[in-house]
Image (cartoon, rainbow, N blue to C red; front, side, top):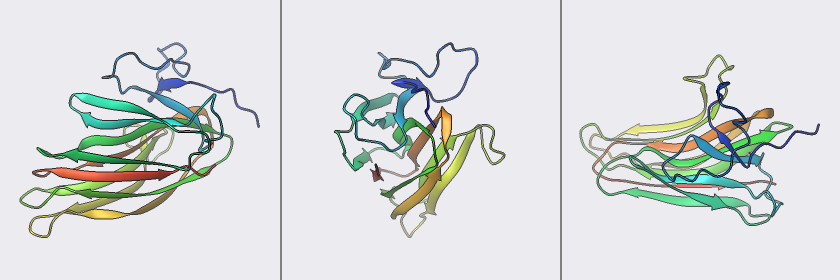
Length: 193
């Protein structure tokens, strides 16, 4: 089935009041996280429409950079660090369209140290307000969590999750939510063309 290609950018959350919300240019403001790149599923075989995502290294204030894959690139790997505090949404953000379900895989690690109230979590969500399990419109695809009073908060592992076919772009977030004296993390997202 052919799909009208949206993009190259669009809003993360559907809002009928915004005209052409899935046909946006790259935002000029680096502090705008409401508009994300729109990809053709996990396809990386084009130089005209490369696979892209926001690499968000801070959410207060928002600090991000655009990651653009080269033709047939098979993965995106990024590291995160906050020497003074935890994470509150730092990660990789993108949207996609797909004519069939597809699977994303990869790996992650995160450590927020130890102590009273310290914890680490890595979460993957996608936007689908019609799904009955959605929380504020986002469906949880994967989550790892650890509290670390005296034992530390280090988490790591691999993930695999199926993203549903969609004509209307769906936004995806792979992010950390942690609290501790300092936090470090890494994400590798495999792009299987």
